[in-house]
Amino acid sequence: MKKIVFILLTLTLMSCKKDAMISYYVKNTSDKAVIFDAIETGPMDSFRTITVEPKDSVEVAQISMKYMTPEKWFNEFNINRKDSVEVNDTKKPQNWIKGIDRDGKLIYTFNIVK
Image (cartoon, rainbow, N blue to C red; front, side, top):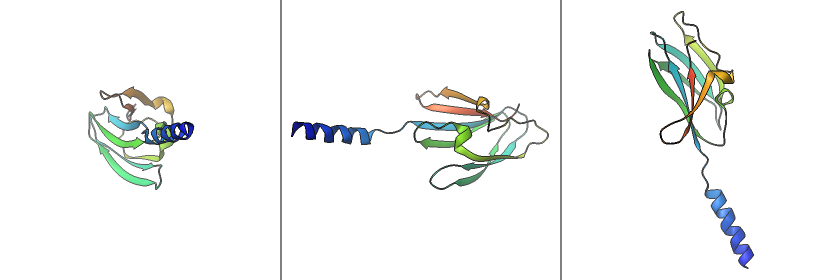
Protein backbone atom coordinates (compact mmCIF):
# COMPACT_ATOMS: atom_id res chain seq x y z
CA MET A 1 0.00 0.00 0.00
CA LYS A 2 2.83 2.41 0.87
CA LYS A 3 4.42 1.76 -2.53
CA ILE A 4 1.17 2.59 -4.34
CA VAL A 5 0.76 5.84 -2.37
CA PHE A 6 4.40 6.76 -3.09
CA ILE A 7 4.01 6.07 -6.82
CA LEU A 8 0.76 8.06 -7.04
CA LEU A 9 2.29 10.97 -5.13
CA THR A 10 5.37 10.94 -7.38
CA LEU A 11 3.25 10.88 -10.54
CA THR A 12 1.07 13.71 -9.23
CA LEU A 13 4.09 15.88 -8.46
CA MET A 14 5.65 15.13 -11.84
CA SER A 15 2.47 16.11 -13.67
CA CYS A 16 2.34 19.43 -11.79
CA LYS A 17 5.78 20.44 -12.98
CA LYS A 18 5.50 23.37 -15.36
CA ASP A 19 7.67 23.71 -18.40
CA ALA A 20 9.92 26.73 -18.48
CA MET A 21 8.79 29.86 -20.29
CA ILE A 22 10.74 30.85 -23.38
CA SER A 23 10.50 34.33 -24.91
CA TYR A 24 11.52 35.31 -28.43
CA TYR A 25 12.45 38.92 -29.20
CA VAL A 26 13.24 40.73 -32.43
CA LYS A 27 15.64 43.66 -32.16
CA ASN A 28 15.93 46.43 -34.75
CA THR A 29 19.22 48.35 -34.59
CA SER A 30 18.54 50.40 -37.74
CA ASP A 31 17.17 53.92 -38.09
CA LYS A 32 14.07 52.69 -39.94
CA ALA A 33 11.07 50.61 -38.88
CA VAL A 34 11.00 46.99 -40.04
CA ILE A 35 7.74 45.14 -40.70
CA PHE A 36 7.55 41.35 -40.91
CA ASP A 37 5.08 38.47 -40.86
CA ALA A 38 5.62 35.61 -38.43
CA ILE A 39 3.85 32.26 -38.63
CA GLU A 40 4.33 30.36 -35.37
CA THR A 41 4.19 26.62 -34.80
CA GLY A 42 1.69 25.40 -32.25
CA PRO A 43 -1.59 23.57 -31.84
CA MET A 44 -2.87 25.98 -34.48
CA ASP A 45 -0.41 27.95 -36.58
CA SER A 46 -0.85 31.64 -35.91
CA PHE A 47 -0.06 34.47 -38.31
CA ARG A 48 0.93 37.93 -37.11
CA THR A 49 2.27 41.07 -38.76
CA ILE A 50 4.72 42.82 -36.47
CA THR A 51 6.40 46.23 -36.68
CA VAL A 52 9.69 46.85 -34.89
CA GLU A 53 10.40 50.54 -34.50
CA PRO A 54 13.93 51.91 -35.03
CA LYS A 55 16.36 51.16 -32.17
CA ASP A 56 13.73 49.04 -30.40
CA SER A 57 12.87 45.41 -29.73
CA VAL A 58 9.58 43.52 -29.59
CA GLU A 59 8.61 40.28 -27.89
CA VAL A 60 7.18 38.19 -30.73
CA ALA A 61 6.37 35.02 -28.82
CA GLN A 62 6.27 33.61 -25.32
CA ILE A 63 5.74 29.91 -25.00
CA SER A 64 5.50 27.42 -22.19
CA MET A 65 6.79 24.17 -23.50
CA LYS A 66 9.84 22.02 -23.59
CA TYR A 67 12.96 23.62 -25.01
CA MET A 68 12.52 24.63 -28.64
CA THR A 69 14.94 26.72 -30.64
CA PRO A 70 13.46 29.75 -32.42
CA GLU A 71 14.41 28.72 -35.93
CA LYS A 72 12.12 25.71 -35.40
CA TRP A 73 9.32 27.62 -33.64
CA PHE A 74 8.61 29.98 -36.54
CA ASN A 75 7.33 28.23 -39.67
CA GLU A 76 7.78 31.40 -41.68
CA PHE A 77 9.34 34.74 -40.93
CA ASN A 78 8.85 37.05 -43.91
CA ILE A 79 10.37 40.51 -43.74
CA ASN A 80 8.07 42.80 -45.73
CA ARG A 81 9.50 46.25 -45.36
CA LYS A 82 13.24 46.59 -45.21
CA ASP A 83 13.79 50.06 -46.72
CA SER A 84 17.12 48.98 -48.23
CA VAL A 85 18.26 47.54 -44.89
CA GLU A 86 20.17 44.25 -45.10
CA VAL A 87 18.58 41.64 -42.81
CA ASN A 88 19.71 38.41 -41.15
CA ASP A 89 18.27 34.97 -41.92
CA THR A 90 15.85 33.74 -39.22
CA LYS A 91 16.44 30.09 -40.16
CA LYS A 92 20.10 30.22 -39.08
CA PRO A 93 20.48 29.36 -35.37
CA GLN A 94 23.57 31.58 -35.01
CA ASN A 95 21.38 34.65 -35.71
CA TRP A 96 19.37 34.04 -32.52
CA ILE A 97 21.23 35.09 -29.37
CA LYS A 98 20.42 32.96 -26.34
CA GLY A 99 20.20 34.68 -22.96
CA ILE A 100 18.51 34.81 -19.58
CA ASP A 101 16.29 37.71 -18.49
CA ARG A 102 16.28 39.24 -15.00
CA ASP A 103 13.63 36.72 -13.85
CA GLY A 104 15.80 33.77 -14.89
CA LYS A 105 13.64 33.00 -17.94
CA LEU A 106 15.24 31.76 -21.16
CA ILE A 107 15.10 34.30 -24.00
CA TYR A 108 16.25 34.41 -27.61
CA THR A 109 16.91 37.69 -29.42
CA PHE A 110 17.03 37.97 -33.20
CA ASN A 111 18.95 40.99 -34.49
CA ILE A 112 16.96 41.65 -37.63
CA VAL A 113 19.51 44.01 -39.22
CA LYS A 114 23.00 42.85 -40.22
